[in-house]
Image (cartoon, one colour):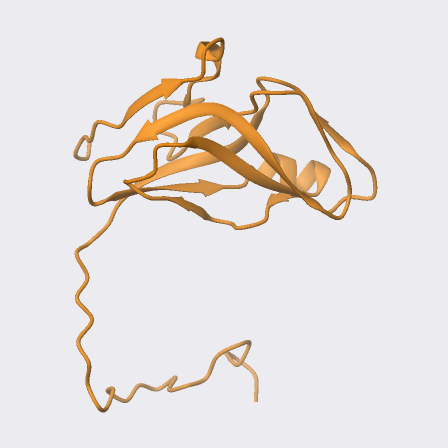
Amino acid sequence: MGSRVTVKFTMRQGCEDLKPTKAHPDDAAFDIKARVDLELTPGRSQLVPTGLFIELPPGFEAQIRPRSGLALKHDLTLTNSPGTIDAGYRGEVGIIMYNHGAGSFHIKRGERIAQMVIAELPEVIFAYTPNLSETTRGAGGFGSTGKK
């Protein structure tokens, strides 16, 4: 088993039943649930409140990711995927959902709408250099792999 980190959280009053949970002990992500009933209309983003407030330790982030079942079965995704929650943020976690489908999708209070992964961040130092090292790939990108 890996190292442990404590992430403090609180819930909006009346939302204690919506706390983040894992479906299985070895899952990578915690399920995040909707705080309200909401209709997601096609072709637009909507903010879905969760009732969740977290306190991450310094050097950590929470990554908010789509649920694969909602993507496959209902054409729902997250607009800014993955979303990042910084250690200094103390507001309610909101999920920005997008409906790619042809019809409306009704979210029910308590429905699992996203996943949250807690990730440790390395201390990064940017070091300016006038030249970067050469690689086989070089500057190729944006679909260049395997194309001639």
